[in-house]
Length: 497
Image (cartoon, rainbow, N blue to C red; front, top):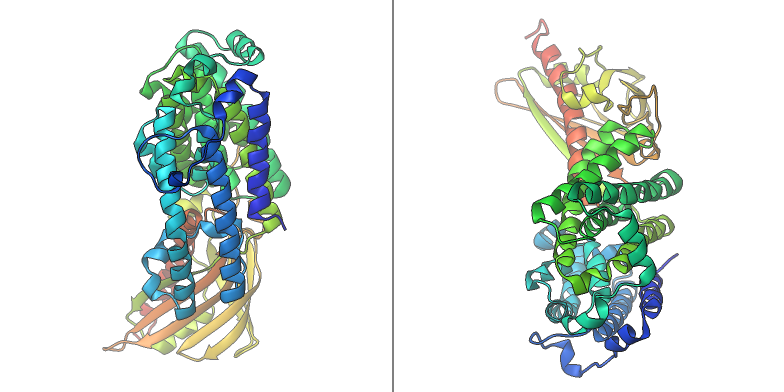
């Protein structure tokens, strides 16, 4: 299994190779002059060499310390992607099980000295590079903090302007030839150079490796926005509005190309578009700041190359590590003016539902149509027909008029992708959203009514988990509501009521 240290070391090796590729007089400006006070001072500036050395060493020390604590004290695995836990877990630490709360609290306390070093070092590096100090906020953004570290490792300090304003001759000649002077022409060429490369990365990561995670949904959009703006501003500094438009347009064109080439359908791209557009604009904002500084812009080719390779590197790390997706749960309840007995009869099997009005279902997301059951009690088999096929459900708990629980033994596709082609089959349709178990509880209400509460447990093997959970929770909740409202109509319309 790939480790965080080997992954990070590969990226540092890439920085080193590009650094050595620069002219000798430029390399001499990165002499390593590290002082102990660099670990806590927040004033002044720091050059690239000390920044890379302290940052890489600090990461290696912290990662191995975390692995020792996790493995030998709490007997838990620890890898690269454990650093990006949902912030809600830290905010609600008191609500976690005792052992989980102790583990998380310990890791947070251990992290504080390293966070301080990282923040003050980044502040000083930003000053050295002549960049706004508010960019230190990027230190706390998952994945983007690694991209930001790579950018600050390559961008020269202000004192190096005389040397660094000279790009390597090959790069300068190539970009001068292909990028027009006019703003519209440079914007068009920026798209032409970035979108095909991003398409290739999607083909390798999603279609090839089947990895739908941090590399695809975070690192790649950030690179697309940054690279398109750096190319757009190659000839002359461009306006902030123009840079934002170019970075957003790059994501729109990438999505259109994915649909046109049958890599993806409209539904998945529509779900991914908010996070992709946001990250592309963040990358574009960084690109805008860099392209306004000639001595920083000189390293644009190096930055684009390093960050481009970062996306497939993340995809490869995710593919090899195969992180276990978190267990998720969705609860839905409805009050029905009917007895528990009447609701129970409609719950275990129900006739065909009317066609859905919900826009998400009408676009192609699978929705329930009817249910039937074979036998009674534990071990019985319930079949729920969806628009894409049949869920087969094994009954695990049967308390008549009170509680029904079942496990999913087989499932159909979670959606039919909307596409101009008759049928496409992206890999995320197979087993990425994985229903596991459902439970329904009937509680009597005063006046003879019943509260029906449903809980579905599932996993979603797409990352960032917190973002994709917003979509998957909403889909599961809408499935619940569709069935519950149907049961409510049938039960309340029964003759006995």
